[in-house]
Image 1 (cartoon, helix red, strand yellow):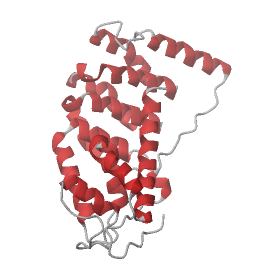
Image 2 (cartoon, one colour; image 1 turned 135 degrees about the horizontal axis):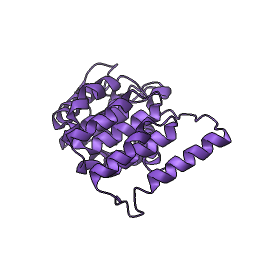
Image 3 (cartoon, helix red, strand yellow; image 1 turned 30 degrees about the vertical axis):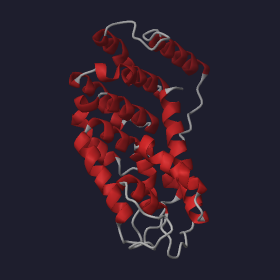
Length: 259
């Protein structure tokens, strides 16, 4: 996406900033740093979640996968409730976290995800090794499962902060941090607001708006949708682009947790 040429008008970043801060201002009036408050988009490969191609299975491998998935499926009722108490369920799922087939490992992690806040700090160690799994989607599902454990999973915060440097894991890792550590959540929000206010023309405003929209859908996405009707065509294009990227991340998350 080329950089918007907005002359004296405020770019999308400035408009979102006004909405967040609850400022009273006209979108079409000049403001300080109006020219620098344009979006600086990351390369497309870094703003769109990368899909992972699954290897072809032999008939025997497919049969083994189906048997394992069936066994895991028997641990959860159609209502989503567990068949067994938490600790017994954990014991039954644990071997599948080490299963050779990545699809089986993912399904085992999803059982942990369903248990969510019912788990405690003693259960974090079951999922921690999967943050280093060879399969990137296993890592992502593990992050979402740990995020459901909230503060019980604070021991993985340093690992998640390091994982943010990987473009394929960045948004999931930030989601995990937002849910596990309230201090990180508050600090990151301030960092994103500073990026929107920065006078530096290279500030990553596109990514800041993208992350805000993904992490704070109730607060930010309605503002973005409203800007699809803005009088300035560049603002409309930016809003459409960011909303599209947010939707791709949301769809991927849903697909991974509800295959």
